[in-house]
Image (cartoon, rainbow, N blue to C red; front, side, top):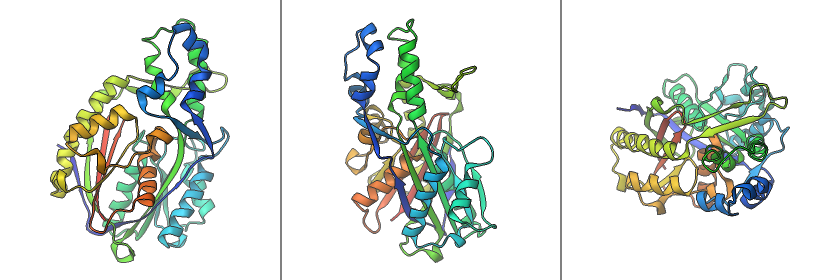
Length: 351
């Protein structure tokens, strides 16, 4: 069973993204791991071979997510030709935030000059925060509470990657089996994405959000866990991931959710024209499409050059995909989100 979502009044008016300028190749990361690789006799090129990720980008360590989110949000509002005064809710959905309190959405709200009667808050749900924000904003529009919403977020994987490299090189007791739980952390990148949703009466383009499905499989909530290291003087951030189990259980959850997604929208899989997915790596991409019975040719992927950018991965991929190859009028577009927890959010658009 899935939670079914259906909308009549909601359109997605704009997708926007911001990329960091600094590019870091997978080879550069592996070279920094030379002490570990030499000790365990690991071949260079292993990480890219396993993941298909050639490079990723990073913001500076001290960059505030709110500043980049405000830049991306402003870009989205301009693309949508929506005045800031019309935004009825602002949701900041990334894992990264300025601080624990107040909500990062507060700083974005201030920088964008949004109105006082705008509901603002953060949403955190691993790699699905922005998709959850889209659902919440769509619900408010469907209920007639607001006419327009902005969902935005910014992720910066640099602190996690830096901490992981340092930890792997420092611990001389690690063996080949033990380092497996850290390798997913080395695929993380950075980026920012924003989405503008509006009531159908305001839409210039008519890209309708029809609805979708949500599913939770929390029996597997321990397969990927990230946190600051207790007692660490520099607040080191580390993540442990059982990549093989997470891949297996995530695909199983996605397969179940996809059946409910098709049923909710009365779609057949062969009627889907374009897909955009959460970006993990080539193994996940290949197995997902095999399991869902979809043709990989209809998908647009960014993981080879951006890596896994957390909650902004899917919306940023949409923004880049529709920019490079715009869908045709009437195309059925599926957004297929899977996040640790395990949670699944799948949304369908009539372009």
